[in-house]
Each structure stands twice: as structure tokens, then as C-alpha cells.
Image 1 (cartoon, helix red, strand yellow):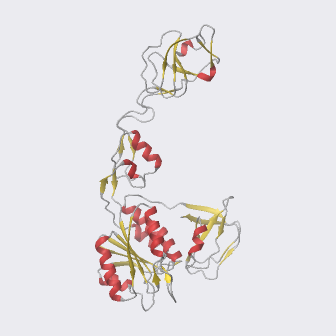
Image 2 (tube, rainbow, N blue to C red; image 1 turned 45 degrees about the horizontal axis):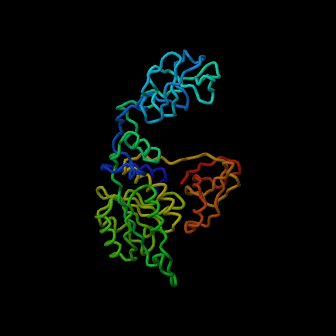
Image 3 (tube, rainbow, N blue to C red; image 1 turned 45 degrees about the vertical axis):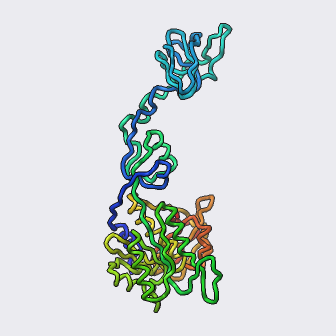
Length: 391
């Protein structure tokens, strides 16, 4: 049994050689950029006004100004500004030649002669200058960026309509156990519905990978061998739930060995999730997660997700917080790191969720993260700082 920290280190040492492909920029949401994106233009592309107002010479702002034209956004100026002249101008429009400031419309008034007069003694330029945000040839997005809505706007602004992104890993999902039936079936006798597979499908989709649900493997050596053999040929990563502990029908570790996988670890000093297996065969990685749904949920978040992101070319970092505990917390055993579902309160304290163990998946529906209770710690007092990892 190895420490959680060592297990995480082993997983993240895995080799990743992501392949790139082109995609439409609107479809790149949630993908990872495979090349820097370079601007094909200055931004702004011309000197433009930041406000509605009047374009004039700074030297003339105390004088009455003659309006010589109106310039809407999208229309180029036709006249040059000279002494005691101005052009009425709308936000975003190009600055006319000769002007070096924009008088905000709310600080002006029209005179009896039809000219305008500025109320104040001074004015800011109120001009966005050509190239002040981005210059042509600048890298506006870097390789390895996880593309969000704000990045879609940047891609659109520089005309990057087919960016290169990394290919998404295909993740095979296998549930094991004779007791499992699919959700649409009514369990009979000692049967239970298969929730793990669909939980994992959602977790995989959430981070932008491609889930490939293969099915339920019966608790026989032959069935387990055949379904893993199939998964090896179709996927970059395989995730199994169940069949990894010490029971008479837990065949996964020995089957992986028969298929040529190198097992890198098979037990972690963590609760929940002790019987977690990680193995590799050439460029195919396999996680054997415990069958209890909280265990599989948390170990996906802790160990599987960072590797999937790495395979997509993204350097994922968990969000870790130090927050005060809202109540006293105790536990009986302290030989493993405990990961306890918690809710983050409005005052930024954390409260452990009512949690009956690793089969209690309903506990995760109200959790904002998990609290780390280190090995050797049996009690944490109200107000003490705890390490919380958001999920």
C-alpha cells in the first residue's frame, strides 16, 4: 500500500504524446489548444473613440466648436478636424484626422449658434489607440490553453476560425459484478442498479473526453478477460469499477497481468479508494477503481482526471483551499488519509456532509469538495484550518 501522494506522482509521470487536429472555433469550446494563436491584425485596428461625444483638438476645448460631420461606428471619417471644429462621433468609431481627444457628450451643450460648448476645464483623450491591446503577430492564446467562452471571443476577434486542438482521449468504461443491472431495469433479489458507469460517463464528458461505455462484465475470469481485451483495442484509457479488491471473484489485477499490463500500484493508503489499481500497456492506461460509487467518484477526480487532461495536452491543477472547520470532527481510525465530502458555507467555513461510507453516493450531491484528514489525525476542532480540494 502506497501513499496517496505517491500514487498521484506515479500517475502524473505517465507519458503523454497528444495528437493535434483542426476544428471549427465554436466547436473548440472545452478543448485544448495545440498551437499558439497569433493575431492577424492590430487591436484596435485603428484609433477609435471609447465614448460617445465630439472629436476635436485638445487645444480648442474651451472654445465653441463647429460640428462638421457625424461619424457612426463602421463609417470612416470624411473630413479633417481643423481649428475650432469637431465631429460628432459614436463609441467605437474611427477618430478623424486632426483630432486628439473626444469630449464626452454628457459634458457638452449646444449653443444658440448651433455649435457645441464643453462644460469642464479639461478632458481625458478618451481614445483607444491602434494596437494598444494587441499588435499584429502577437500570440493572443498559448498552446495548452483550455478553451472557455472568453477564449472563443478571442479566436473570433483574430479570425482563427479553425484552430488546432489536441485530440480527445477515448475512455472505455467497464463495470464488473453479477449483482449489477442497467438503470432501466428493476433490481430483483440481491441485484443493484449500475450507477458507476453513468457517473463516470458524465465525469468524462465534463472534462471534454470521449466516453465509450463497454458494458457490465460478469464475475468470471473469462468474461473479464474478454471485455478488457476488447477495451484495449478501442481506447486510450480504460476505467473499470469493481473486481479490484481481495474477494474470490475479483479478477481484474490478474487479468491485467495476463494481458501484458504493468501494474504500477494496486493499493493506496486512502479512504475511500484503498483498492485502486493503475496499470499500463504500451500507450494504453488502465484504472481499476473500487465498486462503491463514492470511491469511484472521488478517485476519478483525484487521479484519473489529471491524467486525462495530461493526455489532452493540458496541465491540470486541483484547486486547493485552506478553510476553517465549522464543527468538531472526529474519526476512530487514522491509518489512512481520509477524503471527506464537505459543503463550503457562506462564511467560507466547511461542514462535513452526513456521510455513511463509500456506498453513500447521495452524500456527493451536496458536496463542494473533499476535506483531507491526514494519517494519524483523529480529531479536528471547530475553527481549525483544513485542506479542501474542490471537485
